[in-house]
Image (cartoon, rainbow, N blue to C red; front, side, top):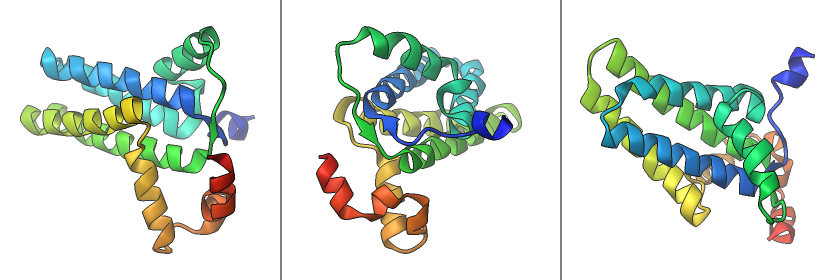
Length: 164
């Protein structure tokens, strides 16, 4: 039961991923525009929740997958889950670092710089469909640092071309 709860979906609906990224853009924009440093741990929680549980615990992902996506007349677009999880892990790492910088060390300017980096990456995903973390995942896989068994769909170029 715990193992199922901690499972990340594979495949992932690309439509939902882009809408979650849109929510991240809105949250990071609010953090930066209003200097709302108190929202950084909330941002961090969302990323950590998505890394460990997919959309099962993250309030933003739950809203998107249970309310927004079903209300839209868009077809589901499956995409491999492991690169998306890797991208969420990068967001979790950056937002955790921002949280520590702000609340443990009082370095708000550095925390805001990390939040801005998250906003750039999330904007690329939300508005252009370009997942920076997924691209890094592919480069690490091509370099042999991520084993092909972690994402067979990513390793098999014929499957990727068929999906396009």
